[in-house]
Length: 157
Image 1 (tube, rainbow, N blue to C red):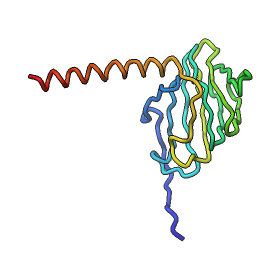
Image 2: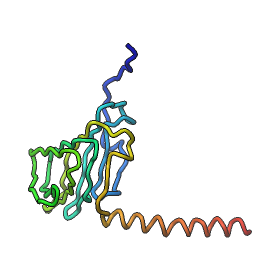
Image 3: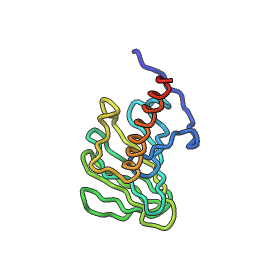
């Protein structure tokens, strides 16, 4: 039997990269890349007051959510559902969902998705773009011509 041996591993939240592409701050902690996980991945979402994670769905994975702090409202296929501390939520594959922090303080939730999609880029389908994502796209698009102009002026001198 040729089975890869996995070792237990602790990953600190402070060692994980920030991901604000979909709104909130999604920090994937225990993943195939970080710990060699083979059946899913786990992380923490930090959502500032008034902020949201844009609507999306997962075609291959179930999602499990546990709120540790704050008050959220989650839209599940367009129907709003309150979600607060010490509550868990199960989201089946293909259910569109969006999380909104409706409280006055930061909200935090732990999420786990499994099984893994065949390839990472197939695991998440955005159905809307968040303001944060739109701002990042605009900043990137503005930076690319500026960088190209700088390269061109450097090449011309």
